[in-house]
Amino acid sequence: MKAQFASFLAAAVLAASTCFAADTAAPAAPSFIPRPVQVELKAGAFPVADTLPIQAEAQTAAEAFTTALAFSGIKTIRATESANAVTLTLDAKLNDTLGAEGYRLTVAPDAITVQAAAPAGVFYAAQTLAQALTKDAAGHATIPALTIQDQPRFAWRGLMLDSARHFIQPDDVKRMIDLMALHKFNHLHWHLTDDQGWRLEIKKYPRLTAVGSKRTESPTPGNRNHGDGKTYGGFYTQEQVKDIVAYAKARFITVIPEIEMPGHAAAAITAYPEFGNKDVPNFHPTVNTHWGVLPYLYAPSEETFKFLDDVMGEVCELFPEAPYIHIGGDECPEAQWTASAAARDMARKNGLNADDPKTLPKQLHSYFVRRVEKIINAHGKRLIGWDEVQESGPTKTTTLMVWRNWKWAVQAATSGNDVIMTPTSHTYIDYGQEASKKDQETLVHKLGNGAEVIGGSLTLEKVYSFEPIPPQLTTPEQIKHVLGCQAQLWSEYIFNQAKLEYMAFPRACALAEVAWSPTAGRNFADFTQRLAVHEKRLAAHQVNYRKADGLPAQPERPLLGP
Image (cartoon, rainbow, N blue to C red; front, side, top):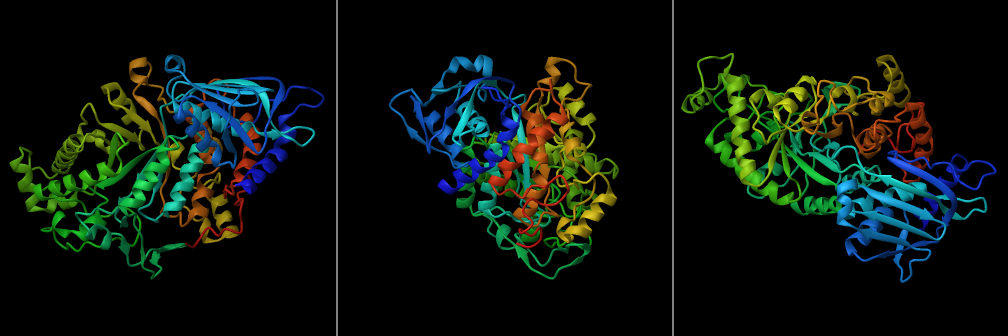
């Protein structure tokens, strides 16, 4: 821990020239990311010893503050006097002005005070405090005197990790949680099942992982249409999931699981074929060995809904803090329903028009989603789905993640449904980071197949330009339904932790500021100046971020391999 603290201070020393104006007593504003709402610099600085003394009446505040600083290697100790200490105060009345996640931070030469309505605010104040750490002219660790009042713009500040295509080791999930917390993200959307793998242990249905977590091969990097001949697998035990959920909770991150349905279900149907459309021609489900949208989807049968009820029962117990369960609902290849006599019969029994092959798939999709929503509601949760769920006629409690056309956000919010903005145009950070396809091809030539991406281009500047509120939403009643935004890291071409960090950062830094900071004063040139300092912090945390020249910050960590 001491070495980590020294490393963090070393990064601060490199940044010191940007933090102090020449021949003045008061420092320039530290390079905060995300940018706080209000910052006022004062003269002087608070000296930092090997440990920060803290005073707090509430144990929850002390724990939040200590946990936030631990990742940066800064230790705390409980103090008996307020002088030269950090005083943490929880005051529920501040909720009216700061909300549950806001804070007031005051740094004076002889004391630091943090005021917040709830422990989350204390946690975020500590993250800001860590970013203010530097060294004075004499080489002593200090925090410049300042006052900050800060609170997030959006309640949902998310990052999605796809563990289905490539399995993310539990310790690496925790590392991403730490990096999310560093940037004040508060929702981890965890994509756990898909055609290429089922990654979550369900005790009542052991074949989901015994069979569904393994595929015989994966696409070869650099030649996505050719298999590599290597068996691939991995899943999370329930104990591992509980540990990760608790780890996230301590960092004020809510984990939202995604269990894909009715499509993207080949792995589950391979494990339990009886829940697929067994009567269609060429029914031979396998855990898929290539990417893309595959034909297998759940049968709309009572047996399937019983299975999903059982699965959701275990899922909801594993994620007790999650108010939502994500069901996907996207890219549903409904041809098997049209071809299935059993599906058509089920449709007739439930009052659907089974004789119209053009409308039957949409009818069954709506019926399926509504049945699953009732199951989720019965377990005390709400349903989130991708924006295809909008086409199925959502209930008033359905929340949508809008990834395609923004019209679905406008329609949903106008109708009174909550939305989370996740458009491919600004938030799919699995897309290439170069400005053009040619530049991306040049990078692959330079770095090798580890730099391969699914396609598309999404630069840092484009992410930073994102405005999550569609301009068509103009009234406070409509705007309040936009809960926030989220970055997506689909993992078809994210092979390991080194590649995950390379794709995520610094674009996640840009989205963190979009989600947290006010729009007033947003300026890309200013952001890039602060980012140059912030990258030294990332380097201190050994993050393999993408540098401005396109190269990884840690070239010794291969972008391919386990």
